[in-house]
Image (cartoon, rainbow, N blue to C red; front, top):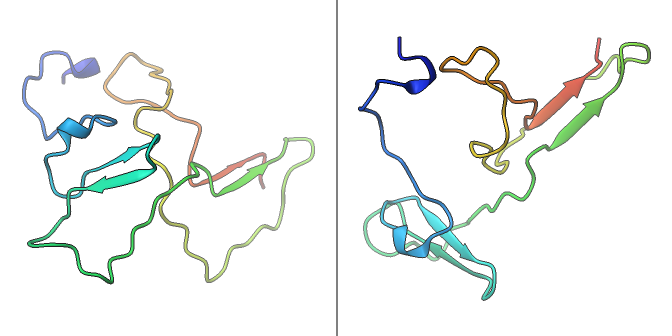
Length: 116
């Protein structure tokens, strides 16, 4: 294999975030912090419908259950609930434990540690 992605010169699409001029594919967006204006490259033909709803995630973790081995969180149940639309984390810090082509990140929409 190509450890650490070395040696591979093929792959899928890539995207650049935070640059209005790079807004060139359906589904991409750019938010101007100064003007508070959202630019959207609509993922369809023609103009977006008036009923279009946009979801702008602001949180990386929606539920955080943090306990310890000595005082664990127990008997936690979620029922009839949907968790959706957290912020992207692909540029967030992560660990590459083996120097290989995979990584670990201690984060998630639902983060739980010290649970039984």
